[in-house]
Image 1 (tube, each protein chain N blue to C red):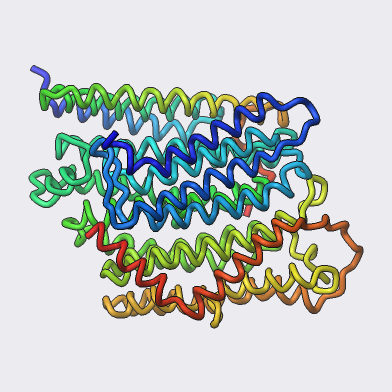
Image 2 (cartoon, chains in turn brown, blue):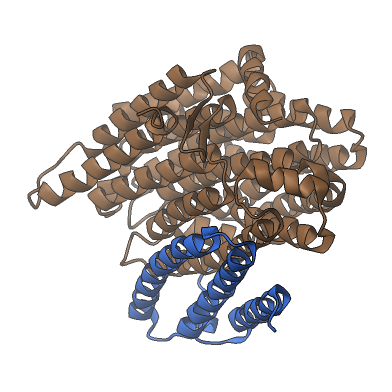
Length: 475
Length: 100
């Protein structure tokens, strides 16, 4: 029994996923079941368990460690999961998504994400990565009658499987050097590094694997396709959840285990971070599909987060954690609104679909504005504090040019966020598209996301303190 | 006498063949097979290193990798079938609805 505490949050989510699957199996045709509620119970339970495990540093089986770092990301994942569940309840039926499978896969993906950030063994990180990836591949293509969905899912799957082979080869080289896949032993072996070539290969291959998952340039090709072709609610979920989990494991592996080789990988990651910020914003400006635009925006945000990893001071790491939370709340809010306005026939994802939203739905237009401003980095929203914190860490570490690229690209990115805002407020709606009604719980979820955006923007100190506290676990 | 290096080089060659296959082959099923070759190249490394170090860890890891490869193949083939239902072709060049 002593082995269990660290995996309790994961177990709770897995149980709720199994319950969702069973509920679907016992459902009579046409019967409605509150499966989203099951997921909500599981996620709130996992969040509470993470809260109680705080500062306990529980370990399970020597390969899973619920330190404060993992728990902080667990809580971000629970927030993402809760918002996804609340929005899904509106969207799933309308979009012809098979309910039971959808909820079960989402919850299984979340359990994989939680395991990925808590794992302290490369092999377990790989297995968790596969648990979450396989679930998300299927979620991308879950609308079987949609040709774009199938194409997006296959592209995502192909590049994902390809990159995980690289990641696995990196693990094999680490195993060759250290004789173990445990992070602490790999770290020790890397520090003494008798096999410099093998060590470099291991680092490079692991970095490629992570770069695919966080969609860093030049490994970002799948992102816009997968995000556009997937049902919007899945896009909202994967653009935030997968990123949070992958960045969590990335920070843990690179900033603690591979810290001794810092001199070799930091310059490469610095170039990738710069390229990611530039490509994400510049190509984002050219898009007319909102989902695709937000996909490029998520690439740019991956660049900002990488900048935090490059500036690997304690501030840099805490900034990454804080920014993950800020980005998750704003991005799931913005994509959630797109999902809530769409139907199977009319996805509501073109820029012109947003024309006149302010007249028709002032509440949603206002919320959308808040989320977009936060993504763009306007004060007093959370995005401003998050970006400021990352760029300040970069400047303090002497990465002036990267900080300048970051500031410039966020200025350019404001252009495409504001395009949506201008559409909503200042353009008359051509032909009124039938926008579906948004239910009370979904509205409440959006309102909570907005409150969080303002809270993190105006009074960020408390959460930043928690972030600083939690990165101490991985030094 | 075969040394560890022989196995590492062989698995490196296999991995490269798999990688080349993913880029060069023009059939989705063959591309999936190329990814399997890459995974099996990695398996070879694990087994050879495990044997060299005298532990069973390498062999045990291989079982995990095989499980993951099987799960990946299941999802991958399902997606190929669903693609084929929409397009009636297995050439990757036909899938161009989504671009830029």
